[in-house]
Length: 186
Image (cartoon, rainbow, N blue to C red; front, side, top):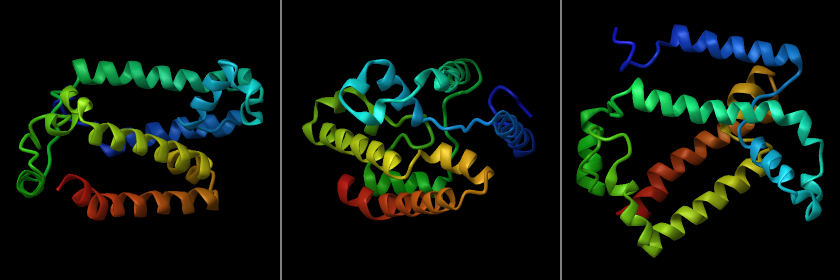
């Protein structure tokens, strides 16, 4: 096994996630990424404009280290531990090429047909990105957390709302990829 380019096996990554969750449960903390946006807005003074941001953000500073660790870890992994190519099923790559014109599927981590900087000048692409960002932000707040918070922290705490949210995330993903994505990018 090539540790530089192969993903960690489930029997290594899974127990590490479980150990992390056990430690967080033990010290009375909950993991989640979207809550960091609330913390950063509160630090920036958003509490002057909305009661939602009036809380003791200093008690949540520890979770900001998760964001910093994710950014640094992502950089290290992409620059030094990965060839930045996603191995996908050849049939899926052919379908992406035929149906959507994504010819770089399986060759690039971020297909330039979707993520090249020149696409940001297209008003349609820009509006999709902005609308999608607002929908993700609204959805995360409406669901009381993001996918990582519900799927990892909420489910490990056996919270029924997290199970319902995770089921909703999967249904939303299926609807997006099978119904909306073909409409938007065909």
